[in-house]
Image 1 (cartoon, rainbow over the protein chains, first blue to last red):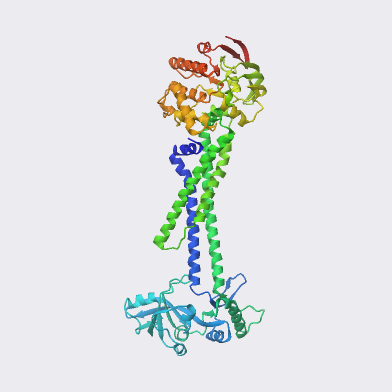
Image 2: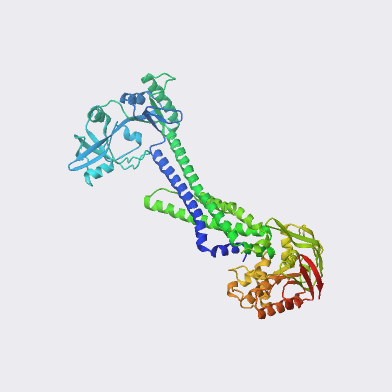
Length: 402
Length: 233
């Protein structure tokens, strides 16, 4: 029996109380670890899907952005046109290619099957700009765009819903009551950075969408690819200059569009999810601290209950430091055991997330050991006051305590 | 300090007073007591309750601090020492036997007896051996793993004696050690204490109000109203 054994013994003597005391630390630790892993997974997911668009990509959207990156009326303005897209293609030397796009919701029919989905109108360069491929058939051509032909490329999910496992290429569908011929199927892509399922979409020539379905002349977005990653910012400047001239906006005027390199969006998304993670961890840490206060409470009760024992120990030669050590070891064992259980529980939670939801939650090993260390420190911090109270008892008073 | 182990302690009190504050009223438990207890003798401390005999006992045991006066132990002045140093002296030179045994509950006999050695940083194996042989000396072989609640009063007091003596103290202070025992157990305990005193040569100071118990001592100190009323044999 040594000092640590002593602590274990007194904790084992009162198992129910020990477990209840540990519970605060257990929950705190488990939630800190789970939330950190969750946040890291979210970040991973967002960055992955953004990067999957290509590092050279620039997005031109109508409406302006403030200095901080917040959008003002973004996406609702109608300032961008197909001519802007063509001008960028022809007048910006750092731009390899670009593609205007516009989207709306639509009802797609084939025989008895019908499906509500997104109708994306775009140009023939879309696949190259998006770094996307077809799994079957062919994309529409520039001539299809010029002639406003009624041809459609189906996303994988739309194809499944309308045609099951039969080949849709060459078949006819109806989009908002107009017949379109299916000429190709997109390869599966999954979620977009904005959380949309990109396989749930029908792609048609943008001119067809503008004139025959929506009756508008603007485009929703222009996606441009720079010649290389190094040229992204040069391309951004060229596009801005060009559009300012085309839209008659002075050097110091607020533009009615904004150009955002994907890499900047990545950085912003990264920062946002980091802030979110920190916030979550801060909240979880509060529960850890509350757990620590629970330990202090129980230790104070324990000191009172064992007043006579403390008196006996002092009489047979325990120095104040010995008493402090005894109670500190006890509270540290309590909080460390709680922390360890919490880490195991959190790891179990992470495993569950990975197996059931497929969330890419990593195991934050460094963070786990840090949290464990922190819970140990909590035990010492909140055990200190009760331990000092115990060590300051007058042995004569303590021996006579009933 | 270990070279002193097994030898009696020389205790000397110089004009020791101890005041207590009870409900705003000062109460003098000891009043100008001067006393010299030579080593290796069996003393008894008698007197009516409230006469200050317990306070005097714990004053010698360094559990009480004088309000005024000096307490000397082995030619060291202890009343001006710090708490830790007094605790070390208690651990190394003094053993206590209490009326209500004061064993730590839910802790085995062996662990209770080991405890003073724990605070001396004796290695665990040696600790266990010493505690085991001390329990054998008080006649409790085979009861090492019993808890206090599983032992009779007499057996509990034997464990307490083993705990007091395992460190080979020079001074053993017993506060009414037979007060909670029947007459047969009382006789056994007193005989055990006397027998061990002769083996280990410690000074024994025994507080009692039982004249029969007091008569076993070589010397008697009679207390009344916080003063020494008389000494005799």
